[in-house]
Length: 442
Image (cartoon, rainbow, N blue to C red; front, side, top):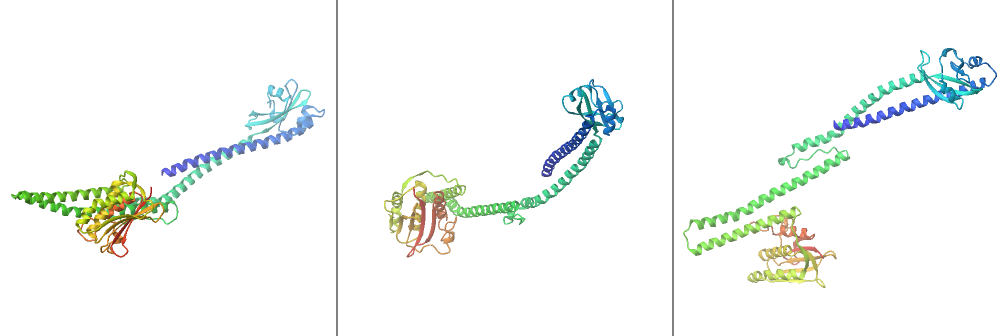
């Protein structure tokens, strides 16, 4: 309705301006016709007056309905019968006509006349002649035009408004259907979509954009539900074990060694819960694009050697070899967060030591583009199962159910993406698992 009112207001202004323009132009054309006619007739009147003929004879021969001749003193010397004793011109107008031709509109000079347009001019010896034309016909034409405009323009406005209302209703009807459908869609109908008009216009594109938004909302809600479900499942086991340990300790009495063993186990469970909470927080911030980074220039060889140093003892205890190598002439420098990059390398090495076999190698080599370096973590174990590779970086995905939280590779991907890099997992050539991280060079 508001759109129709706005449209009607604009149309009303346009029609009003058009009506004024038409009326003004029509009146000007009528005036031009009257003026031109009087000018032609005044030429003939002037020709009669040029002869030595009495003023009354001149008026009679001219055949003008409204004509007068004035003397040098401004008095009326001769006048056409319909005028009687009424003057076409005032004394001041007669004096002005002696100097130049004038035109003047006089009010009603006869009962049947509304006004006349008089043309006056000098005819010599101080005399002035005037011929006039009634403006009755002009006024009647203008009145007819006024009535026509007053009837037709409001009718045109009404017709345009009704048409605009129908057009606006037809144009907005798909929007109303989309609004009504959107109001019906709730969390229980995540797969539902808005109706698309199929017209290929702006409304069709709007429906498509809104459906894409609903699809992203559905994906986000499904991810949220899956994460909550998986997180609840992962938290249930350590919390249950922790409660059991505490129940055993509380039921005592027991010796100091048993109590200490129970507390150490509880401490390990709490540490596991803390790590899981930290991992979930990092992933949540990465989803929101708010993963905090403290970028600095880092030498890749230093990163790799520091990683080997942190895990050398664990690798030795497991009877496994752990080595790092940089296969780039002159080395490589990246711009990144040292703690976050160390976190992803630690996750990959821990996974290789826990789930793989044989030697673990950390290799830096030229990336697929000249502006990138690729870091590869490889072991010689059984490798990733083929069915696991498509979901390797999904949250809570596990090669063996119940081993770990399943967040390690998801964290690796989130941190690498935050650095503008890439990550992929595959079977290593010759057997084993391989994870490749691409980072842009500084």
